[in-house]
Length: 466
Figure (cartoon, rainbow, N blue to C red):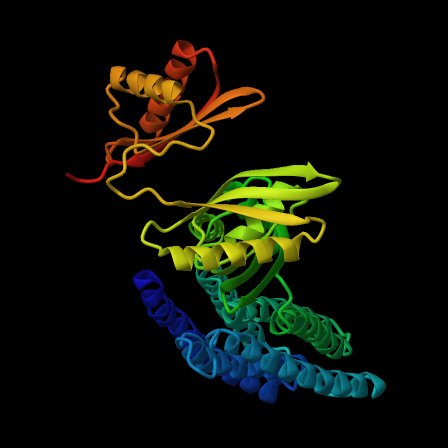
């Protein structure tokens, strides 16, 4: 947070300095070209003076816009003020269009007159234009580097126009050379060429900045966000992804589907991983992740989803269906907080039954078996279908491995064989890779010493202090 808070100020100072230098350079060039146009009679120089005049207006707009765009979000502008830069660029484009029209009109009139206007092509005119070329080139390069470094649309538009100024000045020089060689229409043709450059620059500016103001996603932004999501959650179901950019900050609006029976904490972890991955791919991005349950077709999964949404249910297991006289009935075990009263638990059971029947009208009855969550001082919780002898054997294996007593242990009989679910506490500072290896070793030892166990599921958690 603190880094983001510092960013606007860090960005504002050099950008505004760049805009201030552009204002000074534009004032100098306007004066220089006007003087040259007045004393030489060159329409090309007048056109370039007007062109630089638009750059002066643009630089002033940019200077103002950069002061506005770095303001933090407020109640009226919750997404910040970054679009001020793009509004400034549109203002500049409108000035360029007007100027190009005036230049084109005057140039066509001169060509229609047969080039009767007197134009001075003395050496000082070319010396003046050499100075103009040097200034145009230097400010175009400096503005381009500044815009790339800070990713500023307004400074980038200035760099583009400074480059077009350089090209326009070359065209004016060419036109004056033609005039000096006895081709008086060369100056008017050069002026028309400048007008074309102005129109091209204006069209590019208008298209690019209107797209931003209309919330069009910049090229590659959505693809980058999708890559980041897949990197965090391979195979994730992206139901909606909208991307836009305000100033230089991307905004990503994302809807992801998660398993319907995923807990709130699990879903929150998924959202955090996705946000962190997008931030690495698109630094500074504002990311909003909305999670929706994935549609489930399996009857047990649908029952679990419905039960978890009903009251203070903490865990659902042993979901089974049975056919009774052609009717389908469902039974399930539901765990509630250990401190829940019997009356409250009964109300929750009724709510679970109603929720499941509403979600699955094909069922004729629902039977809920209530269980308390293990208290913190509980050592072993054994499931209904447990085998006490197997549970004792599992505890002996854990003792032999130096793991100690499991915080939870459930043994279930299934058609494929016995399944053991256990939770063991390991040191909290143990590396995740080491914890995974310890869990894998526990699984291997139990399966090796208890051939009747078909599957072992080990959950590790940090040991509580004391």
